[in-house]
Length: 156
Image 1 (cartoon, rainbow, N blue to C red):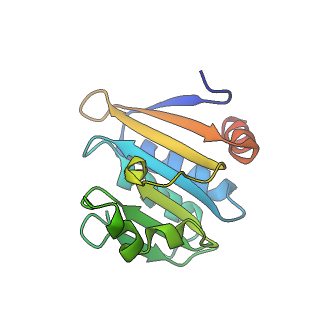
Image 2 (cartoon, one colour):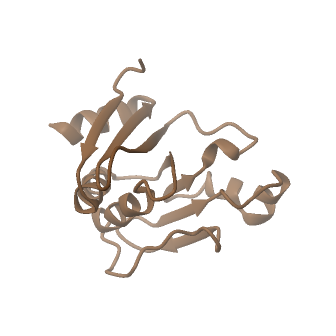
């Protein structure tokens, strides 16, 4: 088990969104969050809450499945990328995915395991599992001291 790893169960989209909002409120500087899980497991719902926690003005946060990257301005800028539809690793460079890893913003990447380069040492990996109609098991795995401490504050 990875130190600081946390499992949270949510029973509605509202609870998943609230979790994202709590994480967003705790963020004070640029960082990376990776998301994985089945379709419909709550990844975009989490990002909707994260955006709210970052004071992104009310607008509909959508999955970037076809646009690849959506950007939003808030207290901290938010970039949301979805790598599911990219099949050729060379296309990550053309799409600007590697540039995102250097952005001074909150960067959220779905399907980040598809990158052929390693992720920054400091990041949060969140995996979503469907456990029923509205039930989700959300596993938050911190990489680095920043995220380990942030998860402690999330529950405190």
